[in-house]
Amino acid sequence: MLLAILYSANNRKVYLPEMPLNLSSLTRNSVLNIFKTSQAPIILLVAVFIMLTGNHSLFKGIFNIYPLTMSNAPFLASLALFFTSLTAIFFLVICHGKSTRWVLALFLIIASQSAYYMDHFGVIIDTVMIDNVMQTNAHEFAGLITPTLIINTILLGLIPALLVLKITPRITDMKLEMKTRIRLLVSFFILILLLIVPFIAGYTSFIREHRIVRFAANPTYTTYSAIKYATQQLSISKNTVLNKTAEDAVLLDPLSSKKELIIMVVGETARADRFSLNGYKRDTNPLLSKENIVNLSNVTSCGTSTGVSVPCMFSSLGRSKYDKETALEQENVLDVLAKHGIEILWRDNNSDSKGVATRMAYEDFKTPTHNPSCEGECRDIGMLSGLDKYIASHKNKDMLIVLHQMGNHGPEYYRRYPKEFERFKPACQTGELRDCSQEEVNNAYDNAILYTDYFLSEVINFLKKYDHDYETAMLYVSDHGESLGEHGIYLHAAPYIIAPKEQTHVPAIVWMGQNFEYKAKDLEPYKDHAFSHDDIFCTLLVAYEVESKTCEAKNGLLARNRNLKYYADHVNPSEPSPAVSLADRPQKPI
Image 1 (cartoon, rainbow, N blue to C red):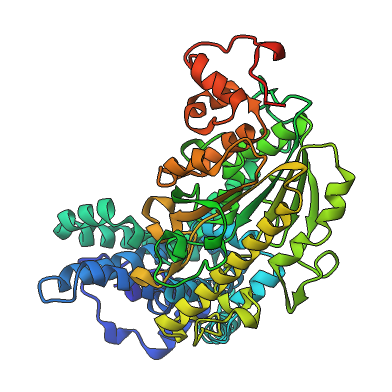
Image 2 (image 1 turned 45 degrees about the horizontal axis):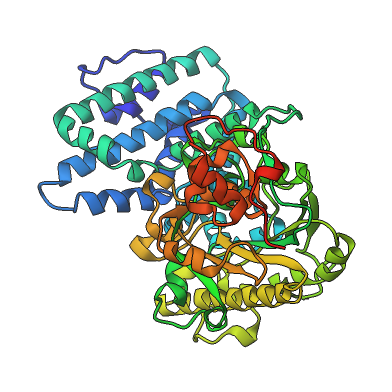
């Protein structure tokens, strides 16, 4: 029927759908003439090609829901034609004139690469994943380039793209081309109606209950996500005036007390169930288990990607209210602490601070310029280098030092640790995780956890040197987890609403020195309490004894020193905090 429409339009004749058409009348020259004078056949061929080669994940998901049986066969055929029709409509709408060949060529390449990541890692190309890609640095990006990706891109992307560039005709009769497009669009819309009507109950169920499968439609959902992401970026205000946060904050710490020295380690891609502290069968925490730490076993992340979790955990918004634009336009907890005299230093061995530390002292440890521990890849341990000098230069100040790890960043887990930490063997030695056995993937990932155990123990040992002169503490929390093949999913950045627990259940560890106002016994009863990234904003304020009504609801749990406990015991959170003079506040023992 579609070929008949193309032929009739090309010859300026109208064939109504109910009129029989003798296909034998379409001679070889006539068909060739259609391809030479109209772009519609090329557009349809590309749509069919992408559906056949770039939608394995889509159809795999569909077959998981509706197994290929005689009873399901008609509905499965209907779904296949439905998605093909949508893809054809998409290209017919966006491809016009001289740009058609370039648009089709570009989408062939994009679709081939999107298909690779969806098929091999089970990811969804949504706004979070696109943001994750956009914020990936060159070194991390190089780890995602694999031989299979290159071959896939050449065979299913570049070669078809070159053919399209060569054979797509120029339009000689725009009016005729538009008539052809309109007829095709009308035909596809009618076809979609005809496909849906017999299976209305099936389509209703599919649309309502199986969103994750529809998200795998390539390239339509990928394009939708890209447009949505671009719109979000364009809507972000360039206003440099920040909205205030916790304006009522008051520093309660008496001048006579020791200064705080806290190191917060922001982990990368570590999942809680791979820490032996949380009951994992392998001893992945041999060093931390010997320290006087409190392991928080029930912590959930704000997002499933670094680009969401890191700015969210330092904001006062919480996961339910988090929005990238809002977060960038308001002060985060580092801003609040800095306003009250706390010196902030952010050291980064990851991509960057995701906008959190743009107003703070920032040091890049991804290159040997600052990091002395670079052996092909710069190690997290290098972030401790030179800290003694920094502390000495801020001797009479409270300090917060944030160390942003490379941690377990995938898929090349074997690169995240020195060879001497390869205790679990054989370890997967490639980013092509599907080419490795499950055991090899687990081994490589667990070895990287083992290196994080070493790094955190070294952070604690570093702080012990200052335990006599400062109130020292370490807080470690990972930004998100990681899927390692469970349910056929790898890596992270799944939409939070359907993200597996492996991506949202994160490890968190607290170590407190001898002079710190909080003791392990104060926090130990809450080690299995349901915490989340939402608690970090107030945890840091409380740690530096900064009081704000923003955190009144959490003070009953978080406040365990004499100054802040006064507010938990004496101030009604539903009423404004009374003005309490320093003389009236309980003081630390001298």
